[in-house]
Structures are given as C-alpha cells and as structure tokens.
Length: 226
Image (cartoon, rainbow, N blue to C red; front, side, top):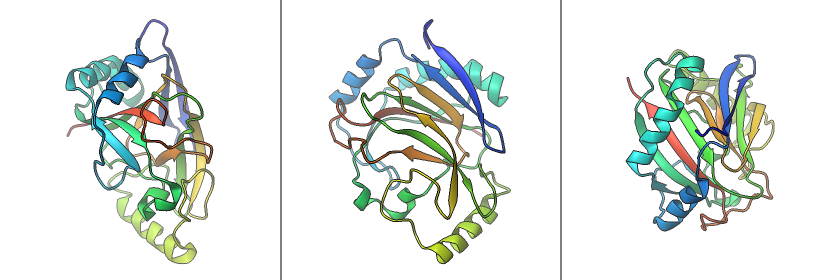
C-alpha cells in the first residue's frame, strides 16, 4: 500500500463477512501491467476462465506483508497466512464456452485461514467481483461444517432448475442471490475470506481479449496455511 491508499471496510449480507477495499493500492501499477505483458500466459487449472502467469515470489511476498496488519485487524489472523498461489490473470473465455462450474459462484476453500487478494489492473469497463447467497441454505460462506449441506442443496437445485445458461453470472438466479458487487477500479485491491461465495462480475460490455494491456487483467494472491 502507499501513503495515498484509501481503505474501506464493507460488511456484506446477513453474515456480515468483511471485504476490504483498498484504492490506489500499488505505487506503480503500470509496472505490474508491463510485467504481466512480458510473461507467457497459459491455462492453469480447470476452473479459471482464461489464462494466467505466475507472479514473481518477491513481489507476492511484499504484497502479503503490506496487507498483514489488515488481516489481524479485520479477520483475526495475528500471523498472516503464507502465499499458496500468486498469478496475473486474464479473462479470455467467451460466455458460450464456459464450463458448467464456471457459471456458478464458487469458494476457494473451506479453511478459516484462507484469504483472497485481488488487484484490478485493467482500464475501461472491467466489471468487478460479486458475492452471493445460496437460496436453499442461506449460506454466504462455506466452511467444513457446511460443505455437505451446501453441495447437497446445489445438486438438488440443479436437478430442479437445470444448469445456468452459458454466460457469466451477473444477477440473481434461481440457485443464488447476489448480495453485493465490488466494482473493478484500476489499482483497487479487494481482500476477502476465500470461503465466501463469489465470482467475477463480467457484464456483456466487458472486453475479453488475450492482450494483457487491453483486457480484464488482475493480480491474484491466494493465502493459506494450516
């Protein structure tokens, strides 16, 4: 974070889970864009709807240390979790090509010490990140005690209503209710618990391109340890 950074705490939905919004997060965000553009991006894992490249470890660790005091203050994590993954990420998948799992809100894991940090690095219409509540259970987050009921309710709802159409989820659906949207703003970071139900908010006007300097570029840190 920089001296110009502005920190806003949001408590969302019925569960009032914290989401920290940090504007003007990085001192030189254009250097991050240039770094991403210099790397060869490729598909990493089956779930992300685009391509990724690893963030240099020293850079990721610097960011982790910058947000550590916020994790202690707002998430009760006196020692910040370690970096499990760090990527530059670029959404490139056309809505018609989305796999069924990519059309639904998701959570990163059920563990309490799992934190997601997302830094928006694109210009223009970039959508944002949306947060959701499962209608059948009322869950806005999924921990180990809720996992089985969540998955059973999801299976039942899909059987009743069918899979969502091939599109990025943007509003309420028969399965999930949208509870909040944090808009994408250049050099804005979001910090939230990885077990909250969330997904990328990508309205139709969002440009999906493989050019990191023109598309929906983000930097994602995933923090987790036992």
